[in-house]
Length: 180
Image (cartoon, rainbow, N blue to C red; front, side):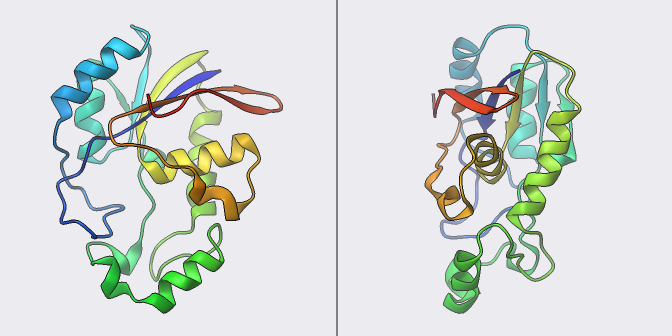
């Protein structure tokens, strides 16, 4: 299976804000649609996160994208909408010490995000598709397919409005294009 993992464009949110599940719009959606249409194979099915910053982009790429909540960004619980600096160094250090297993108060862990995203992909009955989603979801999926240890997960960086293409096989995944 070949998946084109597309990250939404830049969200409209104050810099330095934790915005995982906040349903905020994105800027530059039309430009991203135009660029990605030229880059992605035509006619592919599109699945999208339900959050508007992804959904608007997906609607520009396909007349009827399929919405799946398992492609939503990590739920940061009590941290949502707060400036990162207000969350505090101790909490952020605890997260950094256990990237895969730590869950913010009332939120979910990266391992939980990975589980729900992989469950979504396991149900796709296609050879090739586009998934419009978030950096956190892309990170945990690619980490799984590449067999990366959790301490390396944060090395994976995805630019706004870009596509990362991966071929998934029985023994993992091969990156065919990153941040295109």
